[in-house]
Length: 138
Image (cartoon, rainbow, N blue to C red; front, side):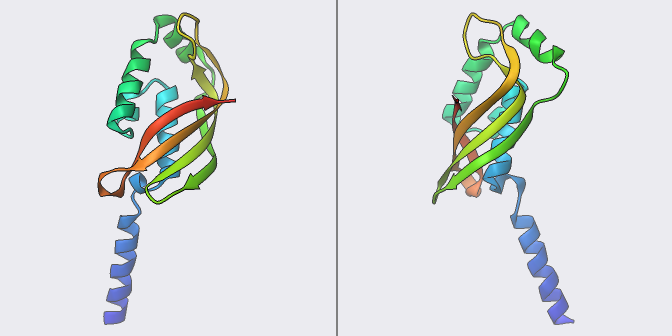
């Protein structure tokens, strides 16, 4: 009986310790999908304070024409981790995105397409990963 109880407690602790905020791949995918879908409030919840400022700046530069392109796309954005390099308190993640809103030049209209991104995540409070940097790559 006590062995079953011990097994149950260990299983419970293991299951509850693996939250969604402790997996850098999931954080990276959720952040990028939210960012590319212009769901900036969701994206900022997964970002460091410095990255929140960058997201706010990007959001302030979107135009109605950009949002019209986003709303007219036929398929939702799809994000996939391509590579992950892990270090003690940070990791570098390379991601592929398809059907993404690409608004990469101020003054030009956005378009929907495929792109690759690299981001740096850092461990924050409670060992939760936060996105610190996002850059497009070719």
